[in-house]
Length: 91
Image 1: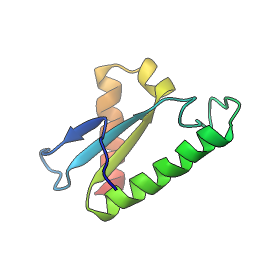
Image 2 (image 1 turned 30 degrees about the vertical axis):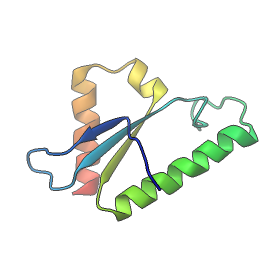
Image 3 (image 1 turned 30 degrees about the horizontal axis):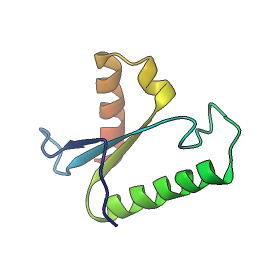
Image 4 (image 1 turned 45 degrees about the vertical axis):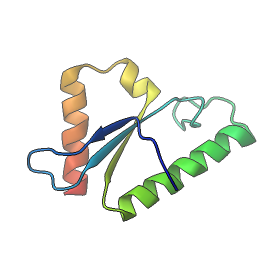
C-alpha cells in the first residue's frame, strides 16, 4: 500500500528507526475512549489503521498514533513525554 503520513521524522538522535506520527480524529478513527456511536464506516477506518500500522512497522518504521482528544490538551512538554514513553516501548 501507499501511505501519506501526518508527520514523518526521518532522523532522531538515539533512534535508528524513522518515525511516523499519525494524528487520529476521535470520530473518524473510532476512538475507544470517546466512544462516539460507531458505524461500519468508522469501524472500517479503525481496522485499516491497524493494518497500516502493522505494515509500516514491518517495513522498519516506528509508528506513534495520537488521538484527537490527546492532541487538544497537549503542550510541547506533553508531546516530548509521549514520544519518550513510546520511544522506550520501541527501543
